[in-house]
Length: 384
Image 1: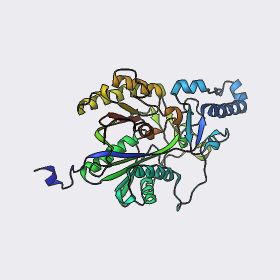
Image 2 (image 1 turned 90 degrees about the vertical axis):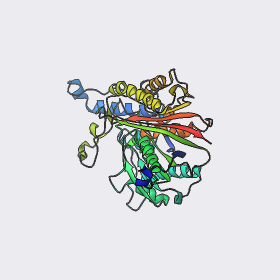
Image 3 (image 1 turned 120 degrees about the horizontal axis):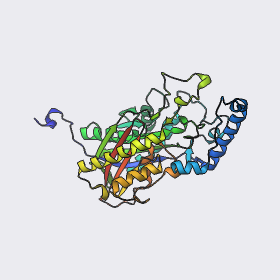
Image 4 (image 1 turned 30 degrees about the vertical axis):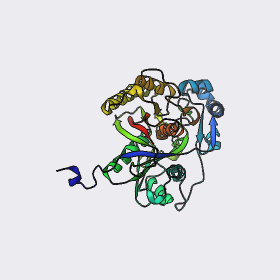
């Protein structure tokens, strides 16, 4: 008996990316501004603990520098939702007025903005969309799901749920949406990634205070039968997870820090950067090559790689392994320099900003990787 007889809706759709959307916060912090704030904090800390430092009981904090940041990451600036408190040496964290339960949450607000752009670019109304997946590295609350709040704000009748696979959330969301389309459970699915990463970054940690920025992206995954004439065929997707403590954030509703230790390091983003670099680069590069072989795609013929925007050095090595040569900016575009690491949204920003110029028939790869470890690949081909 055929699958279609057993399951009337099985494998009825062919998923494509119809459009993407992007919300960029208006405020940006340059490396120079960030370093000035951090070094002011260092001066205050070292002065307050001068006696203990002299006695060898407390280690003096070291300055950060623009040169250090750019060499370590390739980042030159990042957008944030709340610039002043992040740069205030007494606060060094985002702050905004708490909103009532009857008001749209800040995470939903930026997610809605990105989603509306994606819908507009595809010519979609709320009635055309069946589901909303909120795929992001940190959720503003446990429940109700952020996806359902975004769904309501957009006026979509259907369903929604949240999913978290850290920096790979968006690509995992794209495969999930594609699977719904293939199975016939939805014709049009929004994958929304509102990433307010400034909220889980330890701005007082010299090794990571420069990494993250805020943003929101949206990807509209639809059945090819209803997609706009020009779209991106989803040729194939692959997901992978391997448990690692080398990137971790312990903040959650079961293990809140006590008020007096709310900035405890393990309740914010922490990572073993060198270990991550050494372990993730070969894992992701091999995953891409293996999936390309399975799909019958020559990786050296990929027109463009839209890689996760976490570290310029990691992307350079992965692209070289995949393409067989040092990738040009055209082959592997960077948004990391002006956006910073935006977690799961990074590769989507790169795709959103650097895909319109490709020719019909060109193939490319959207790829993310991060905590978990997690990695996701989405091979696409331009149609129109």
